[in-house]
Figure (cartoon, each protein chain N blue to C red):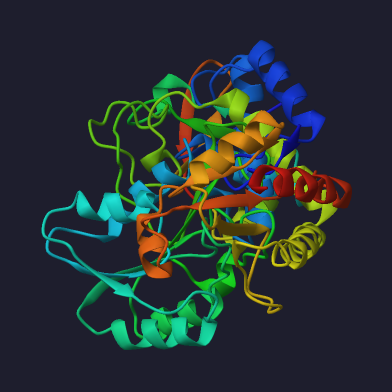
Length: 373
Length: 84
């Protein structure tokens, strides 16, 4: 099998992740729910994971690290904290349904899209500059497009938001673990990310990094201030009602440690190198339309393409039959496809991780050529 | 031996407090807050030896991480709040 769908979920993970999950299932109870050893061990595990994330993403205080089910859950908390009915919100042209559907669920929200061509960072920045007016209540932008791998100029967009005093949310679903993220320097109100992609945690894990106190999305027990019938005011308890996914958190900690051990720069470099090689080979194939940044540094380890006369779902199925795992369709991001002009066709997406090799890329090109032949 | 309980607002706060103290050379452990001093219920405290109280408070004050309140464990199941 050649697994090239890491933008959805990294299937290949460091072995210590599964080992930690198994240990947690057998040894850990719930943090904050008792003074007995399994509860204390769970509390220590959760704290170590918060600390590791705080270190990786440059937060001052581990209490700012909130555990969520996934990036969508984290984005929902962040969006519902900042956006109220009738508000005007600016988003990038590459947002996932996790952002756009959530905004649509809030009554009378005016969503303004900062439109700019694919792989054009300057035009993207100009579009945000034009759209972020004083009546905007929040700005939401992805760090990397999950469809095209386009790396947005997040430092500059963040600076723009800060200079205009507009709160902002960054969706780091595709960047956490492969692109440097400095929470302190960005000055974000919230950064949302999954645990199960570039951080190599199990599915069912995610993180919300908080620069301000969020509003609870769900309410319930927190193991603190239990006599009160309102949620605690303080983090992380305010938005962590209910029993924690301790097996997931234990696995996520090992995933984060792996990223720290290898290094984000090295991981990003490896993924980009594989993608540059793949792109250079794919553009030589007749009838293949490759969406690439043509040599610039604003594309991550994600590549979308189309084949003339062959729909992407059929192509994805043919590849799957040959043991190649890719993703076909809209990738839950119709806005991104609308912007790029691929809404009707969708694309085939190839995405890599540190566990992919050059040899796998070579083999993939051979199989791909057969599938379109 | 006489102990103090640094009563914290949450488990994570208590963990951060204990970590900071340990790094500063103060032996500290996270404990369930005894029911009689738990206030609004279900809390965690950091237990330290009495000789460590002054350096502990200095460390925590420096990091803006002071506890909600501080109790002296009187050793007979009773606790007395102390004010600094």
